[in-house]
Structures are given as structure tokens and as C-alpha cells.
Image 1: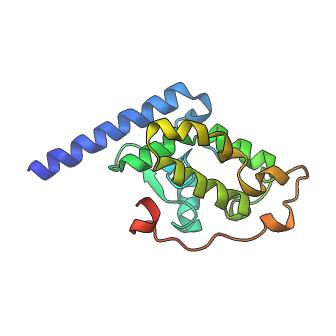
Image 2: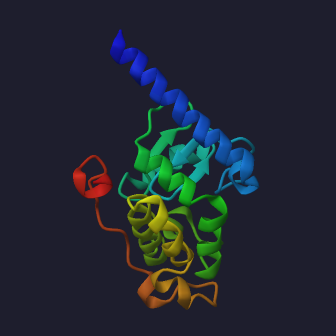
Image 3: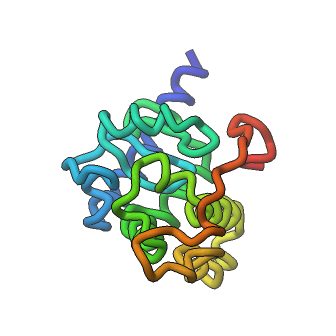
Length: 174
């Protein structure tokens, strides 16, 4: 019974944090991929909010590209909540726009080197103490090949795909 109470408490705290993000950041109140209102799912690895339909598509990408959690039904680790706090739909869309990836397929958008580098920067920032994170945040949207974007087509170095990552292991969330 104590385990149930603890899990319930974690879920409620997570829901409160995520609700506050959606309330305070207008872009997070819509699905990052299709703009559906009030997304109830999130891609922890990309720090974005998703609707139910898009969360299913993200599951099809694989957990190494998009690790999907329910905003209301899952318990979240502190680092995962921090990734959502540091990321967000607006920052992710800015990275996509900088790299000419907005019109690309879901697979291309999330597998592009710019997205891989964005995820790595987001995960690294989420593990940092609060006072150190702010100085590294401007680099998230413009990490790696994000600086190369000008044309709608990604540059050669942005065409590589994501490597497999064990999201359940220590190498992912430490």
C-alpha cells in the first residue's frame, strides 16, 4: 500500500509540473507535430508535447529517437521533468526551422543529425545542476548542424540517422 501511495504521489507531482509548463508556454499547449489542442503525451527525449495519435507515431520511431510518456498516467524521473522544462515545443520547432526540417517526414525530422544533437544537448543539460544549465541553454537550438540551416533540404552532415540508445540504462539518464 505504501508503494502505491508513493507512485501515486510521483504521478501527481509530475502532472503538476507538466501542466504548469503547458499553461505557461503557449506552444506546449498544442501537439508539436500536428497542433492538436491539449496534448496528453510527451516525448521525453525531445522535450516536446504530443497528442495521442502522434504519440503512437513516435513509438514507431523507436525509443532511441522518441521515448514517449503519458503526462497524466506515468511517473517521471526528475531528469525527465527537467528535460521537459528545458526543452519545449517552441525550442524544438526553432531547431527544426533552422535546419530546414519543418516540411520533412516525421522519420527525417527526428532522425536528422540536428535532432540527434539537440537530444544529446537536452539530456546533458537536464543532468546539470540548476545554476549551470542556464548558460548552456542557448546552445540547444543551435547545436551542431543546426547552425548550417538555410535551405529546406538538410545538408549532407545532417542526413545521418540516430544511433541506438538504451533509454532504460544508466547511459541515458545517468
